[in-house]
Image 1 (tube, one colour):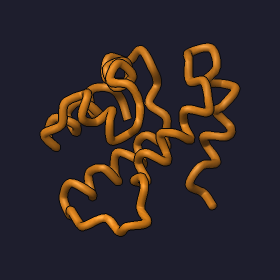
Image 2 (tube, helix red, strand yellow; image 1 turned 45 degrees about the horizontal axis):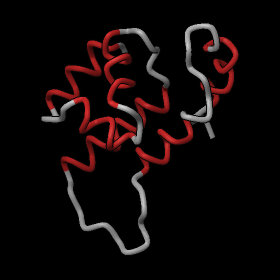
Image 3 (cartoon, rainbow, N blue to C red; image 1 turned 60 degrees about the vertical axis):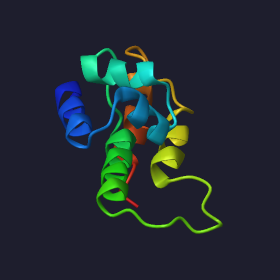
Image 4 (cartoon, rainbow, N blue to C red; image 1 turned 30 degrees about the horizontal axis):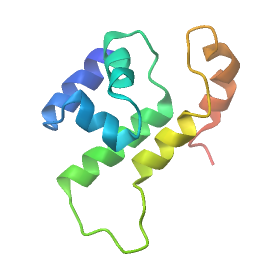
Length: 101
């Protein structure tokens, strides 16, 4: 996914950058950097966005035990890695393995 696609998808969901950032548990400037291409969008953020989309399309009452959405959990997981341009190669093998379990 590229930044233009992310921006288009976010807008189609009626979300601001701040809204999406809150759902992903990242700063709004991170969403801005994804959309402008300053940061590469990790695969796990793409998966989290799909979850956000489902949550908006099919809202449900959260159970008492739910403290965070999958999107927030995935975004926190992503936060453990530095996805700056110089570090993408370091994390590439790990990212490619996500979702293949």
